[in-house]
Amino acid sequence: MPESALLQPRKTRAVTPLLGAIAFLVFYLAVDVAVGAVSTGTMPLPGDPAGEVYDYLRANTTGSILTGVLQALSVLGLAVVVAGPATKVGGADGRRRAAVAVGALAVVAMLVSAGLSITMGLVAESSSVDTVTALRNAGFYTGGVTHVVALGVFVLLTTRGGAWTRPVRVMGWVAAVPAVLSILSLLWFYASPFLPVGRLLCMVCLVVVGVSLARGASPRTR
Image 1 (cartoon, rainbow, N blue to C red):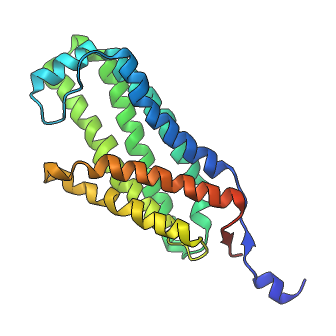
Image 2 (cartoon, rainbow, N blue to C red):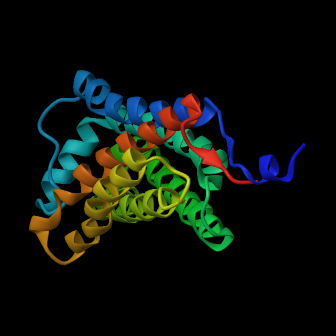
Image 3 (spheres, rainbow, N blue to C red):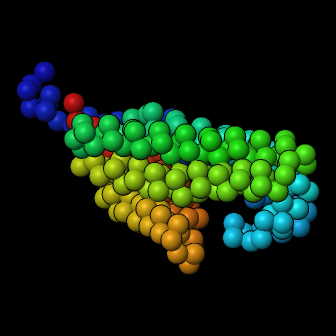
């Protein structure tokens, strides 16, 4: 084979990142639909009085368990993306390793949140206000800010690879910026919308990444 052919980038064609990204998105969106079908009342916001949070969670233990199960299934889809070829499309080795590390953090944070949600559903009826609200708050911070910020950094690092198509690189910035800015919600309540917006945009971005890989549109250097 001529040397020039060896230097040419070869196409990466894989469907597992697309399947993982779709699962990540669909199972997460299913949470609201499924929980809405079994829950009663309006879910309190994180800053609402502890008594209101406690009463709601004690009355909706099935919803808490279902939330945890669906979130766990969702983030397993993200794990497929993190472990797949998406992080190998161009770019420096250090950035690839960083992308895998922060992607793993996003997966673990959501798994912890899912486990806390299931635990809360199992113990809420027999536990104190402090225990239930502590579980709820811990789940919010792990599955909210920690997960979304890590997800945003993962998307940003992954889509910086020089071999990605322009739509992937642009979508990476569009998704990552609000996701990373969601960290401001720890200090400023009005930054809270960055959490759902950044999360959903990152999910959509990973679907775009998956489509690009499935079509073989993004080459990977040897």
